[in-house]
Image (cartoon, rainbow, N blue to C red; front, side, top):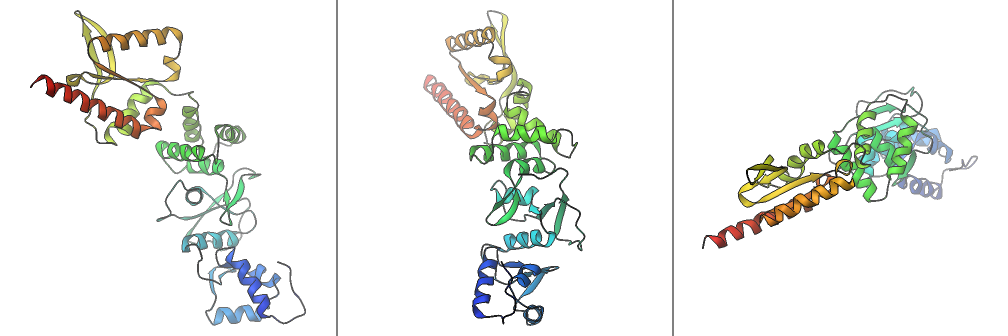
Amino acid sequence: MGRATGKRWSGADEARLLAFAAKQHGVLERQQILDAGMSEATLWRRLASKSWSELYPRVYRVLPPPRGAWKQMLMAACLWAGDGAAASHRAAAVLWGVEEEANAPIEISIAHPHNGQERRNVTVHRMDFDPGDTITRVDGIPVTNPSRTLLDLASQRTHDQVDSAMDALIRRRLSSTEQLKGLLRKVAACGRRGLRRFRAVLEERLGIRAKDSDLERLFPKKVIQAHGLPMPVHNHPIWLDGRLFAKVDYAYPELGIFIELHSKKWHLGPERVIHDSQKQNELVLLGATPLIFWWDDVTKSHARTAERIRRAIDMARARLDATTL
């Protein structure tokens, strides 16, 4: 907004200033007000009358929060911190829709030292590398872009939480594995907090670290317990003609349901594909119900996977009930 010097403050000036404030969630920084042409005396009269209030040093609420008090306070914190400040970490995750706003912190990152008074209700992080093109805007609020937000979130959230956030952002096309790989290359030498977790989650998505042992660890938590299914037997042996025919990852032996967990690394070679097919055929001929699930079935589509297991259990129980009549 250009400064209107040499004239009295008018109703039209007021309307323009408030329209500008509405785009900033009802808050203005002191210099923005002065640049619009309002005098220091008029500004202080507004504050003294309590028609305006100071949220942070030199940042004022001039309108009720048009889109929520949390967003207003977050915008005010960015204005208080100065040029280059942006919502980040958990606050950015809320703006991108991967975390809930309830109890969300006012959390920002800055690209330069901040000489202002620290505020107890604002968490301030120092950007440890050139923000470059990693800053954008959501609803008018400066914010780290989705890829950068995931990297920051990895220093605060668990592996599974970061994995869920990554999945949501990629599914909504707000980020991509290529963008995440590019960011990883950019920050690989920084040694920043959360980098190891960020790398691990991304590598799992790319199939680099997807191992059977990982799936066996995640399967009961993400599929069985989370969806209220009965706990199957782990590493169940199957005997055929007096010899050990196979071991399956999980099983409901009394129902004849055998579950195998496959990763691309260990189950896509031609010899392994033939072996797995032969084993599945034998199980079918024995009257069993073999189920095969892959990495994404367990980590991404676990609700659908749980429903398929539930249907298999119901069908097996129905068959058992029919044979006892």
